Image 1 (cartoon, helix red, strand yellow):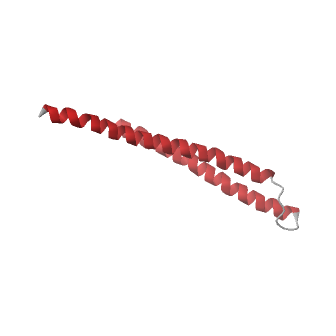
Image 2 (cartoon, one colour):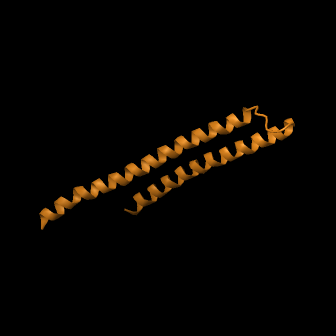
Image 3 (cartoon, one colour):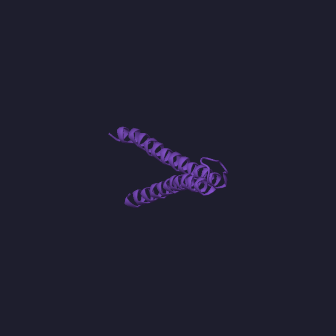
Length: 94
């Protein structure tokens, strides 16, 4: 009976390490996405693209696109924070 318990424990630790690795992968990917979206947002603010004839309209269009990138960036940052909170709560419950 003790042989069965000894053999199942390494499998459980491998399973936990796999979940931890996936969570780490998600956090790293979301942090990378945060920096990429922030970069695109600032690029759009500095971009001098011409979409229509008036300068004010072009500024409004670029500002709207930059806002979309900033929202996506902070959405990924909030996701990283929520993943970390989930991980801490799960560790406390053990």
